[in-house]
Length: 113
Length: 116
Image (cartoon, rainbow over all chains, first blue to last red; front, side):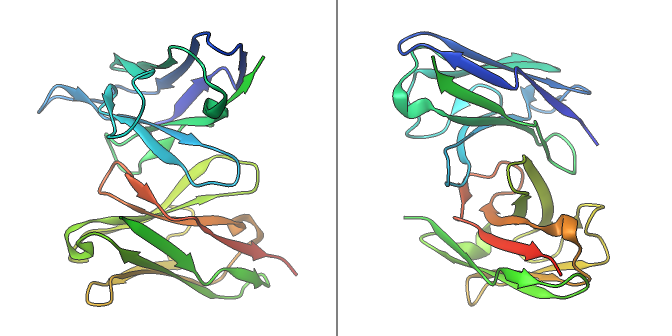
């Protein structure tokens, strides 16, 4: 199974500042057929199910604010929130879907400083 | 509007059984693969099982293989998870989620507690 490791485990950022979350896979998740990375990001607020934010490592899901962006390739990926808003407080998970079983990172808890 | 509503969770003793259901609406259920993903209290996400749109392809996590059975009824727009020989470590919120690989919609989840 591909192991997904996120860093940091928790993060405190001031309102309006940039938040950066990293995700590393134990092997490449680059799909050669379309040259896209099989990597998604989810946001989970307390008491709610996860919500899809980004797929193919950098494609925002419909309705997701453009302050959320994803980058990276191969084994190293980043979720960036360009200007943190209060409603962004949540746990963020990365997920690889390159090979079965799909696997998730352990999560990064984002709080307001 | 896409909606997924899970039901069937509850408290069960070790070795017992439960059947979870997920009722889908707002999309053509028969066109989509579906997944069960669970989350132990205060923990991360763990994929449990997947089923293709026509039930031709079914997959399980090693942790549940031989104990859990996924199924679907496209006419009823419903997804199921039959859970047998339950263990304490199966305690979690169980979510149904739409998608073959990327889970684009999730239900609110149903809590399964395994305890004597």
